[in-house]
Length: 505
Length: 134
Image (tube, rainbow over all chains, first blue to last red; front, side):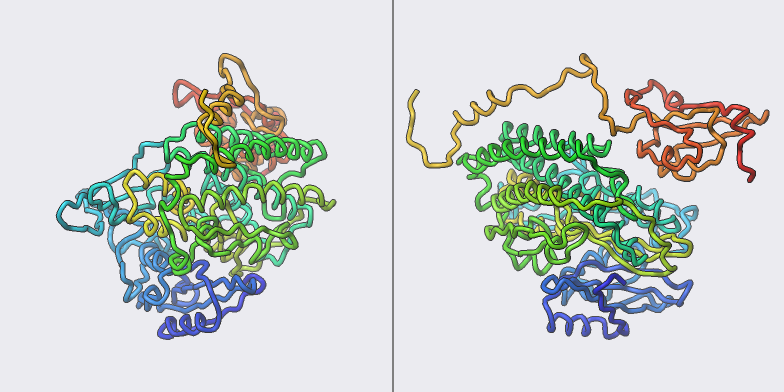
């Protein structure tokens, strides 16, 4: 697998104990879990639990085979809560049952999807699919009590955002419990990738999400390059870092504005939107696309930047930096605005650790985790990434973390442009051997996104597993909300600003 | 106006109003005032009929399967681009072996009916004679 990965193969019955032993030895974080249908080659399914050792920049995968005629495995979730959604996902999509899982409900598949039909299995035939016309109810956890009100919100929302359903249990204005139902925009991207050449998967990877396009594309390209034992040329690696920081910048500027929208602070929302627009127009001038589609490809970059473009980046960011400074003063200095943010939506560090949270949401709760520093990639190797740590864990802390990261991004881009290596920005990637496994990652604006691949014959992709930052962090939102007021929910949600599309794929 | 003492770094309503005044209006008067797209921008892909050699590289490369090469009963070939599926990635132009596809800057592409979203170019006889044998 990718360099620095230790692979441990265990028997199915030893899965839980071996992970338990691993956790006793080192501080590990569950980075992803992949289920594979390899019955055609070995008669078995396989599970790969990939752990990140952030302290040493290494990775360990614990893998087990599951007999094709007995698709059950012991659930790791009671030991490791972070595994919860991964195990429900392999149940839905591959039909592998996690025995002992505390929440064995469907996660991804619609309630009307027929039983026993698993889309990620290699023998899945969409032509055989029939849906029941009877409406099956979705089983939300129901709470009962005097004065308790159940509030359903979405999937069509007040603001124009992605679809997701939130089911609140509230007493008066105070939220006791929140359950989120997501996966409305599940498009089957992982399945679509299977059988395509690795170059043809790139347009899919870029479009998993609009706001994390560059990060997802980078993680995918790095996975392919890793599988081929190839490293992109130095100039490409530096430019990748520049564009990844530009993506972080426009996201954070817009997200700061969106936090204002959660409190009705319209001036702040508009200010953030203007700054974001300025950043996105820069993206368009550089790449032809506001969302940075079409900037990376396996082997390096799609285009190079010349002196005038480097100058454009510098002068645009110089202006933007001044405005961002004034914007931050507005946000941090206004008492009635801060009052809404302070103490709202507190997420404690233990919850982040238990569920493997990433990104600014983790850093705002005191968990110093950043893949640019812990597992350097592309042009980040050798750069100093400031640790933008806050400990409050509230909306204010998440906003401050983003403000700090915005200014860090200005400096990082400046450093990178000031030391851009010469040379080419693209080299052809040699065809990876069939059935090579590798993964790539990038720190998107929301945290680490990790793309795991298994190649097939002729440079095709046999299995593609995307685990975006939002996959780790959505469960954290449900933990940050109880105890807060219903009107604070949009604000708390916006302080995480997670992608639905990245999660759903 | 009453000026109350305020702590350092405080942002008052006056500061907000001053910011609003300073920033002014950013809204652009489009379409009243036209605008283009940047030099790097990707607009409508256009096929030069006499340069096309029917390699179908564009058909294979298009991630949205927006391009078709259609042959009529009288053996006339037509290149069809369905704008409803085009994502303006530019891959078609990049892979074309003869450089027959140009990425123009045309972006005002709305149509009033679904069929009007399909661009059609008749491949010339010259193109057919250059076609690679299957």
